[in-house]
Length: 592
Image (cartoon, rainbow, N blue to C red):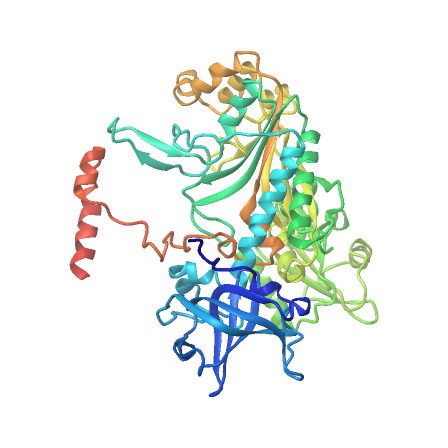
């Protein structure tokens, strides 16, 4: 015998045009109001909420209903009584008169209210994440995430890309962040690593003639947590053969525009802007600039070329700079301005000079008396300063001055939220970063094509790479580059990095060998899905757009992972714990 369906309609889709229809709904009891002779229930499902009305004299079970009971019911759609309509609800003009109700599953008392108007501690929400999904903010985040990923997949399919899954148990080739390691039971003493990215495998796909690849890839990095960083994350990963940087950027722009349209309903202006790495640092003090507001960094070193003010002259004589920002009309007291000085010093500056333009065009500042009239006029002109404006100056190395002013710029001018979306490409990164000990490290990764091989070999400290980042509202969404396809160029990169032939063969031999089989020029990129969604949904942390994230301590409160494993499991893997770790665990067990 055929069973009756548990649901014929969604609660959140009922409207006045359904009045008189008999419907079967299924969902959860969001609210229950017992008015003696009648029971009102707000029934919630994935589409929304509708009010249902139950006569307990006909359905005694109405008195037993509690919040978050899962129920199925049959009833007639009817108009609400005049004066009881709710214009704030899509279904606020109708209600359902219940003739039959079945409790599908009861609910224990709730650890927090399933209500977007009620605030709940994040740790509790993570412990009961499955209940958090019923709340409007997380439900919206899941829907938006699904819509964004679907839009990006569609853009890739329309562009002729082939979706390929790359392995998640790979060889450890530590570059940058620490690998997440997995011990092998079959080959005891040896370890897999979880991929920090599909980098080398997607390059091998280009060697194999795949031409255009993409993947919604899960990646892992054993890094410290931040609001925009987790141990595991998701990225849209692409690669194309016979591509230039422009091909990559155009493709990514199309995918991002599709995601923004799906989530925000906005048409993004294409192409995105372009900034070189050096321009970004000079103008904004950061390689991930927030372009939604001005307050650009201005170099006024020339204004003080012959200054008698030692605070500026000393820095210039040492090869430094004098740079500043016009903070606009901050209206800060002397205490507030001194607070900015303390902030600058905490960031590493020796000090911070502040000057406020008075109504008569003169400067109010502790240093004004040490500056010449020409220097003060030069500041007015250089910063286009108007009465009420506050100018902040740092005299130091170009790198430190830029970093300090870039941080102060964000502190003073960054808009709240992300109503405006300001995308930009940052291009022409250096090939190498210089470590504190003077050694070189790849600025992106060691498989990035330099603009000039000669510059890379002869002047590695200043060599430019064919690398590019995508930035949105001051956050890096992802990185990419034109890859090295010539094994001889790859060998030169390893040589400049101080990686011997033996070490290169040990770590990357399987990849280098592949480059010798007619590798096409290729390029690619990866976009952080979690970071993109956090900005589009204006969430403070990527934890709010990831279904099952970890806390800042790397813990999953729901499953209590990471957990200890038994001695039997360790023996099977050929792994033992260090004595001090064993002692620590024993002490914790005794305390428990």
